[in-house]
Structures are given as structure tokens and as C-alpha cells.
Image (cartoon, rainbow, N blue to C red; front, side, top):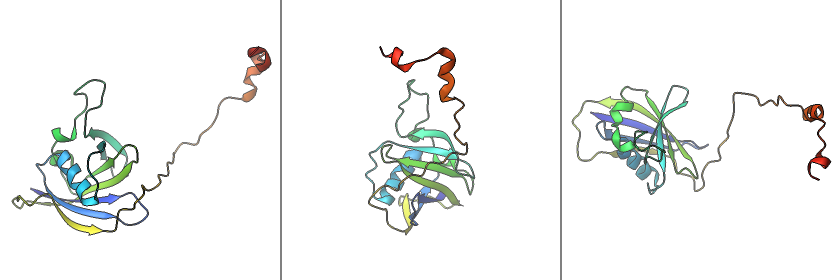
Length: 166
């Protein structure tokens, strides 16, 4: 089974790569295909995350198990692509390089029952150039921040900062 996967870099400009890959390959193979397609070395820490229709981040599949309890998480090399992308429209979020946080949206756009070949994975479409600098992230929250504490709450304890530090 051949999977056609669209990978979109989270940036203002359109930077898109479509990759054909064998569904029985593992997520580490997809990681390597993505880093090659976008011109990265592939040596930085990275993870895939299951995602839903709204691109909410779910279960993590890291390149390396960095958990406190070995074997607690499923690593990329331990799970096949078809186990997480099994129907058209399934989505993953891919984070490459945890310092710079290159973020990619990964979506299964086509499934073919054709025989796989040694030519896979293969870059089959490319649009746009990867920016030299990491796109700035805009972090937003659905919850408004509120402070339930009143700065004058210390008065009920007769708090005097001058006495505290003397």
C-alpha cells in the first residue's frame, strides 16, 4: 500500500511537500523522508503527534524515548505509518528540533493499493522554499488569564514588607 502524504510547514508562505511512502514503513522512515524533503539534517530531536480535525495535539511518538520509565512511550521506529494514518484525511503534527520548534502539519491525502517499489519514499510535489529562520510562533490561549488574588490580601495577615526583610 502506497500512501501519499502532504506535509505543510507552519509558516506565512506556502511551503508544501507531498511524499509517497510505503504504508508499512515506520514513522522514523517518514521522519527521514520529511527532513530530506525540507532540507534538514534529520539529527535533531523530533516527535509526531496524533491530531484531530482542528489540529489539536494528541499522543506523542518521539524519535527517542526520553521518558523517566524506559518503554513508557512508543518511539517512531516502533509503529508503522498505516497504524496512525489509515484513512484519507488522518492528520499528524510533526515537530522537528525542540529548540527551534519547526512545526509541520501532516495529512494523508491518498491511499493506493499499488505495489510498493524500492523508489519509495519519494518526493512527488514541492512548493515554496523553507525560510532561513524559524517562523515565529504565536501562542494563543482559549482561556482568558485572570488573577483571583488581590494585592491587598496580605493586609489580613498584617504583612509589612519592611519588617519581613529586617
